[in-house]
Length: 119
Ligand code: AMP
Image (cartoon, rainbow, N blue to C red; front, side, top):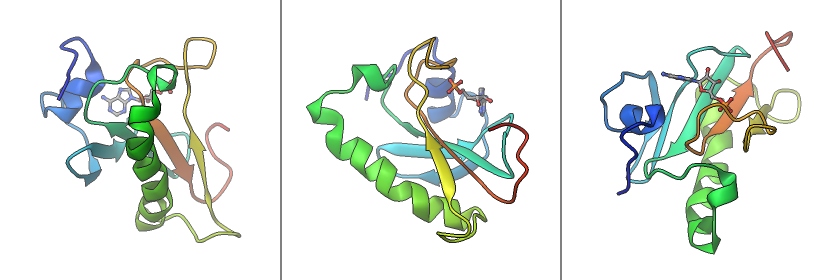
């Protein structure tokens, strides 16, 4: 498993920085965002260091597929209401102009009653 010693999300994956865990398996960690935009706001990250969606290749497709397939289930577990009245937003900021601040691929999952703090 590849980690970047300077990456904050790698440190969270390794337990060197604490997080409020939502889900974990061999490949994926999900934890609550430290500055939530919405009543439910958690991040899903691959445990291996992938800097962004721009770095993804065909080899990552199963991992990304698993992350996306997991998002609705975790959203419900975290208190999002069911589709279609409820639902959730899935966002992957990519690159500086894409709004990415932490350069370890992460999927934002946001939901819950509106209004939200942002978005
Ligand atoms: P992005 O702008 O897409 O790169 O999003 C980075 C997200 O990581 C922001 O929503 C931050 O609030 C969140 N974040 C940064 N540091 C931490 C941390 N230590 N624990 C949880 N979330 C974090």
